[in-house]
Length: 183
Image (cartoon, rainbow, N blue to C red; front, side, top):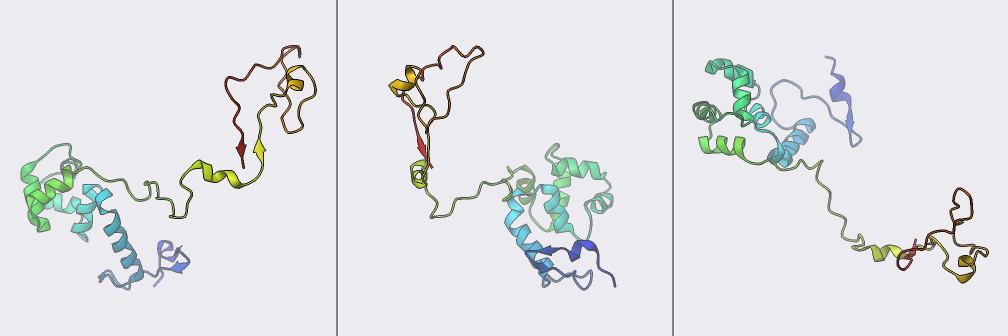
């Protein structure tokens, strides 16, 4: 039996073989990774995806057809666009949960997926910009020495002063003290 390209991809350098049959028992590496992902990302998943996972191998469209409603009506309910309380009650019965659980699944605010959350820095990460000042070179924007102000040669550590269109305009005075950043 030939496996699909989806299962031949490697994750973290470990090949994930397909489950041996359509009957899943949660023991294969792929199924364990999927279960872990569902467990960690469940609060961020839309209600329609959670219901589809719970109905598997049945599909939402199959359940809608069995209930005599259109799939669009079910997706509108799961998206929170229309309440359809009677249909929520029937879905709760099909899933074996209370209507309150279905209401919460549909109406609760979703968390950010872990892939969109900004990770916490490691414990040894410097907590302020001052800790970055031990690397070496200084950045100087302009040398405010009297020789430069009088038109003399610029300091070798300062970048050349920008010249105007005719070259006769002196550079503008800096507003406030100059700040150097040691890198």
